[in-house]
Image 1 (tube, rainbow, N blue to C red):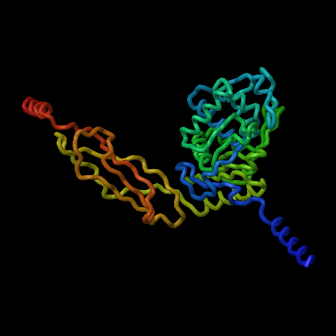
Image 2: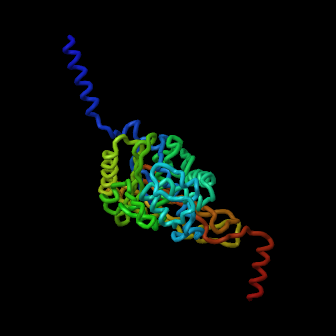
Image 3: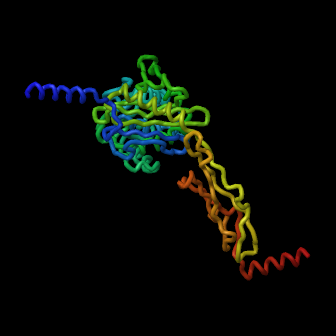
Length: 375
């Protein structure tokens, strides 16, 4: 009996040890999405709130990029290093108090080298202090609809259990970063140097060397967050991203991210659905001297569908034959609805393209006077 129990326990131990370290289960979160629309293609635990550690540097980079796009900061702007920035531990580029460094070198330090001291310097350059910058980080998260995200510092190295987000929220952040094309060279650089070649930078995201069309973004790990990655690529008119949070094994995480990205490029297409062919160009107006006014509709966004499924997309318009005045240019008068088979996808507003004033005794009289004068 003892021999049997011993064999049984050995088998159990062998099975448990053979289980994959990287597991897309309750202990890991992932998402696959399209970058221009944010459409989610596949996800696991998309809204599970988990520590993200140094992935919060993506928000640090975004706020700095916005500052540059508003021309309130430039890549060649030189800033001074504070005592506080110099005190940062962990990954760093060994900045010294009162040292001058350009914003571009700080970007390289943060994006390629994951440097905590560079993160603080850029935060102080953007907002005046890290405290104010962190408030801006959280405000921006709220603006982007990142409902389950919170930050307490600009680098994620400290309080790594308090930098919280979800893969769903981070996908919104990545879609926003995607708009800033000038960041791509930094995100896709494997090796570089700053501070007169005294500080070597090696990208923690090894996929920058392995994925066709890669445009970023970041890999990192802390004790509380585990291994995390956000990676995206663009090929032709298709741009997809993958985020994995909380992986136990770094190598398997990289492999899984690459597999997911290659699969979505192979299996999905991005299209812009067509509006209905019979949609009217005018709409009648009641109780107005203007009988008809032209209509227009908003931009139709891209959708992501499996290859071969284009014929399953349809659209219908919903619009009355007439509306009542007064109508202002831009007022909604109907909508176009898009479907994949029977499933509703999204809608686009149809709106008035001109004004139509309400009929009154005064404007009727005014029209009669104009007719008499012209006669």
